[in-house]
Image 1 (cartoon, rainbow, N blue to C red):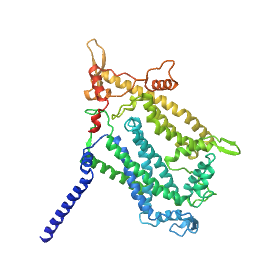
Image 2 (tube, rainbow, N blue to C red):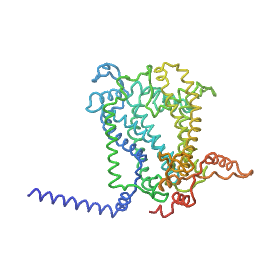
Image 3 (cartoon, helix red, strand yellow):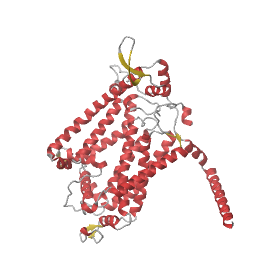
Length: 544
């Protein structure tokens, strides 16, 4: 009885302290307003919006596992004979970094599991972030007012690649050392400043003695800090700008329909986080990745066969392998086009195009309206075809990064396979663009037929004149609204003969983007209702 009363008093005091603390904080900061707005925020129910959350939970797993690994990893490049638990390497000179990775793998309790979870989480993070960006691109979710969030997402992807490369290089094994040799060559290919930059980064000629400690600081401090800051800014902007949503019953360009933050979305998101953690734990325990003990310590005079980086850097490896051996001597200096173009210029152009695409599309369309409804990819055939062409371009480079393995497995000539990849790199994106655009227009034609004739019933009947045909049911009203609620800008008017060249180029691009379309059969009332669904938000909608 005495203990029960004491427990009741302790609970009452804790409740009173919590209420008092909340009141103190609420008087000095907009806690109530922020909590009310967050709990009332509508989150979409479509599965495609969970891709970003998979990336977020992968980052959380990376932080937890990475924090554990930092307790045991030693980022040193001083060599000494190995005396650890792995017998085949005893007595071999290894660096402190490589020895500490072996100690984590074979001597620290749970070390190998945590290390493999960390590596798998990095791969899943970059993959989920990339697929999330595909979803944003193909649905037009990068348009106003979300251009800045698109730039943040592209920067996050670039930082993810950098973070992955730094972490991949830390073990100082023969495979990662081969990657570091490639990175050194890329840096040295930069005209004028390349050799000076390489000497500064590696603190002397390759392989140097400070690159691993420097990569370690970048990996555990600088890049994670930027990642967390940008993720926080991205989430804040998502809360402020609201999610995009697919057109449907009750969903317009002026509202946000979905599940509230608590309890529906919170429970669903927490379940997804547990699933992501469980899958990563299963992969870490069952699927071996990066067995550095098989590769051995790095030696500058050794090279490993079947040496490919993690998948997200495979496109860079493929570009280097497909580039012809072009070099020129300019003013007594050799310009290595075979390294500079595929490893410096090409990635720079890809990411520059990624960041600037929203500006380019807005300039082509002249559209300054806010967009909160997702486009169906078929309704924007040119944009969808461009995205698929870039994906095919990346996929060819990724496959070319393993051309030696493909040649070995299929017993093909490596030179012939390289020529095939070079031709595919040029022709593949063009064919993918044309095929995707025709497919999108065919899907638009199918939607038009559904609106005009209805959907198939599976029944065949005979009319009064003896003709036999398939019976079709009219589409439900909700489905008709969904098919008609599409935003398809008209091509810009062709300027006169004396118009500036900039306007003529813009009109030509606009016609190329939006001249191909399939009109949807609908009466005036349906078209008016569809126009109301896609109408621009009012100023008061932003305030609400």
